[in-house]
Length: 93
Image 1 (cartoon, helix red, strand yellow):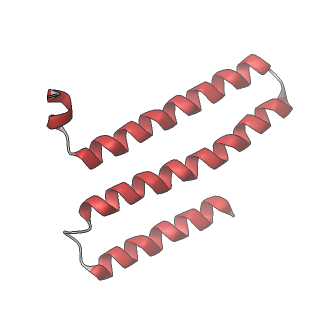
Image 2: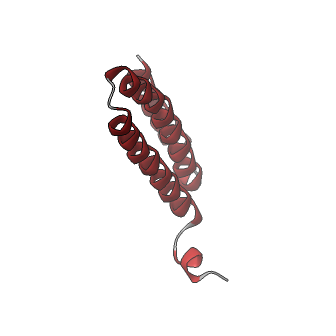
């Protein structure tokens, strides 16, 4: 058995891993922008990040909500869902 894996809650570990992947993608994009040294290509790379960010946000939020869903009432879950929906609308508009 892996002692590192048993030390953390599975959902928290999953969320952290997704954030590390997101950070790696962001750092790679920054290096690529510097490598290409072109405004148009940097804008294209930045546009790709605009797709990756919300996807990571939605997945990590979903994992977190599923992990705490047993401890919250349906009303609170609905309010959290509405809040996440508004955040997504704000990101995409």
